Amino acid sequence: MKKILVTGGLGFIGSHTVVELQNEGFEVVIIDDLSNTSLSVLDSITEITGKKPAYYKVDLKVKKEVHHFFEDTVIDGIIHFAAFNAVGKSVQNPLDYYENNIGSLVYILQEVRDRKLDHIIFSSSCTVYGQADELPITENAVIKKAESTYGNTKQIGEEILEESCKAHELNAIALRYFNPVGAHESIKIGELPLGVPQNLIPFVTQTAAGIRKELSVFGDDYPTPDGTAIRDYIHVVDLAKAHIAALQRLLQKKNKNNFEVFNVGSGTGSSVLEVIKAFEKASGKKINYKIVGRRAGDITSVYADTTIANRELNWKTEKSLEEALAAAWKWQLQQ
Image (cartoon, rainbow, N blue to C red; front, side, top):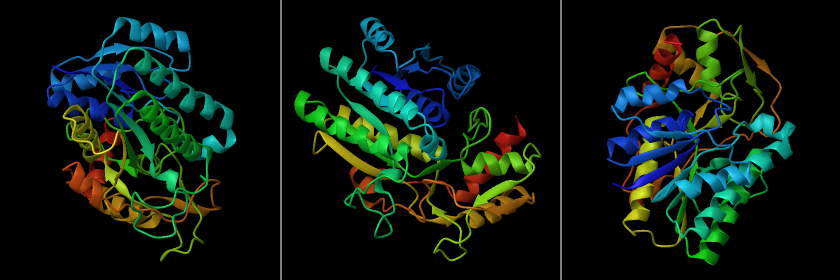
């Protein structure tokens, strides 16, 4: 049984990926510093799969802690999620984002190099494309200057990985996610940000539940059909399964290059107002929203061309936006 380290494994995408890994027969070791999640997620994962993953509370910003962890644990692959991930906050706190997102990656890769480990899946983002010239976005799109510090940490992260793969003969895949939404069908795990949500869907569900007074829609003057920004929303379970497909590709030595990138999205763009309407339909609740100014670091429109991922990873999305929104609402009602 292959042992896989999942950093940020108690977070939104991480926890769903841990479940899929366990379902596929992998032994899972989780690292999480609990900065944006809680330990109860570990129990929820165990309830879903019947197997409790090993868990270590490690601060990946501290080199000594990273070193100690790898001294005691031998692993066959790494899925690296752990990162700060709010676009708006990153613009306000760039240094914290660079320390956390870049420092932790470097410390992990140094351990991988020194211990002759391999098989790394990196949690990247469509933010690396900036505002693309053509839509949908293919993996061959030009990487432009990032619009946010968060996006820049993902660009730099990919560069660090690519150079490390070349220098140290490692094998890695960067998955460029679009916008993950939804919750596991068991409704035992989902997106539960600590504090004020930074992503659209939890803000929508919390507004519907009366936790938030109203939803702010950032800008209605974008050059889009209804003036609001367009994103590609992918069900988190579909996204989790893409990680398994990518990991298997590396473990089975089917990768064509030692560093590869794939777009992981639904391939469909939805505007903020379209998402609100779809949520109202899925939940039967009206959303109280107001239009406010644009948010720093946001781009106009982004959605994926997933042709290459569909072919090379033998993976495709199976769940609709409506299913994801219905699951997100059920999850919210349980909180």
